[in-house]
Amino acid sequence: MTPASTGASTVVGAVPSAPSAPSAPSAPSAPVSDSRMAPGGPGYRRMSFALFLAGVATFALLYSTQALLPLISGDLGVTAGEASWTVAAATGGLALFVIPMSALSERFGRRAVMTVSLAVAVGVALLVPFAGSLTTLVALRAVQGAALAGVPAVATAYLAEEVRPKALVTAIGLFVAGNSVGGMSGRVITGWVAQEWGWRVAVGALGVVAVACAVAFRLLLPAPRHFSAESLRPRVLWGTVRGHLGNPLLRRLYAIGALFMTVFGGVYTVIGYRLTEEPFGLPQGVVGSIFLVYLVGTVSASTAGRIVERLGRRGALYLGGGTTAVGLVLSLGDSLVLVLLGLVLITAGFFTGHAVASSAVSKTATHGRAQASALYQSAYYVGSSAGSTVGAMAFHAGGWSGTVSVGLLAVLGVVGITLLGSRAARVAAARVTA
Image (cartoon, rainbow, N blue to C red):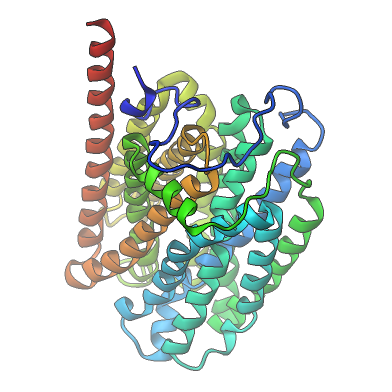
């Protein structure tokens, strides 16, 4: 039975991507049990904290305008759908540039690309407060997203090369936890600062925080020991990408990541509008504090490894999807308690599913890991852009129930794709026993 033909719960560490094109391995073929990092070992704590800070900076900047959309709408005189482009442009820029950035990391190194990416992104962050129009703001956000593309996929490739396989899910879970802390802190900081001094000062303050995270990241991240530089060969790059896209398991994981993020992007783009309107009428600072719910994501992402050990990957994906769906339904209530409980479940389910799917991609790809991760990140942020835009349009047309309907359709897609994986696993098992 070839693991590539199975579902997401398969042990995929030895799965080759479809052999449609040659590609040099991104890590040496020396034994992996001797010098790779593991919990408690030399450098692991520094590495984990450095990438945690990179995740904080990335998500704080990427979604820096999301909690401020009602204020941006009022200041610039635009609708919710138009303001949502300040989020969609950043995530769309990331989705477009994540594969080129991953290719650059194969040539110039993971740490170098992540460092330059963060430096450019925080530089743009200090310009965003001075945007005089929606067009300028959207353009700056697109550039910022393109710069940030050098962090997510390259970080997971770095981990796949430098961390022992048994510790990989936990290590990626900690990086994803940093994403959740960044998303939370960015929204909370901007919410309270904006309430007193406006959205421009809020995004500027967040940019200063991101500068500090970027500097600490560069000082703490250990130099890679298992990276081998490759020349930039477009034909080989395309062959590697085509090979990954030819792998049925990877295609399913990419789709699952995109659908989970469609739910998350839609919900958190629109929730500010819902909570500032009746029957809630909450002030901007309190709306920003709602994003403390992200702490739930920090916990669920960091415990994803244990969930997989107990339920398997498919079981963990079902759990993430089911939890998200229950949260969406609960959030329909007009009680603030129900809305908050719904957001807790949506956040927990999303971060569980994301951590499981992204770590499975890193384990599946035995070569071209940066490109495999980049394809996942590209699909993931396409889902974010689609979710934020379609979710805002659905809210404009049908209120919160419209946004929830979009989310439930996406969750249904996650369940359907995971069921296809289960069926593929049964078919492969039957062939082996026949």
